[in-house]
Image (cartoon, rainbow, N blue to C red):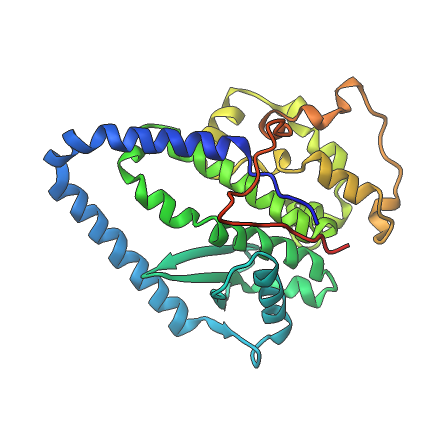
Length: 289
């Protein structure tokens, strides 16, 4: 059993959002009508989205795509998620993604159809990684936490920084539940179902050493997700290169330089303070080796 470390910046940025929201409460009363209108708009748009998913998507259960449903059930048990989210598959037009959301107290896990097809290609472990990532959003209650600190959204970059930190936390949980599928899962999201097997992991992880620039930096700061090349962590690389289960890991690696120590990856240095899931989460995870 292994404890999962929460990315240290998730806690830092969320605390800053709480402080900001509290400070904005008093002057925010003047803008209360506008805030209520915005809240109503978000509520209605989310409700319409969930209605579309329920009406046009495919509800995953023990009778419909049972292999996918089994993955969700097993991971919910590991993560101590008592109420299993409703799971739907939607046609994605070639997009590879999944998402977790919440509406009126109910959690939903939405999986794009092209991602499910990866199971049919024999890479169940990749889907396990991505589902575990999304279930971590459910476990950590990220959707509602963002709603609780809604006033802080007026501070540029803060809520985006918090969102990126949440993604790192969820990546780590995904890695713990499916270590062999983690690195290929990120490569899949980066290059697609056909090309990811031909990608060189170390070259991609070091890509920003060559291509980094102000615009690369700014594009990430304006995004809810870190750049994919930065999400390949040292732990993921070790899981990949110590395994010879897949033929693409057997190829010769390129010559390395002094910068190869990606333990210095700026946005995912190991948290020396050892932050773990809060006591109320009472979480430990068993990797699927």
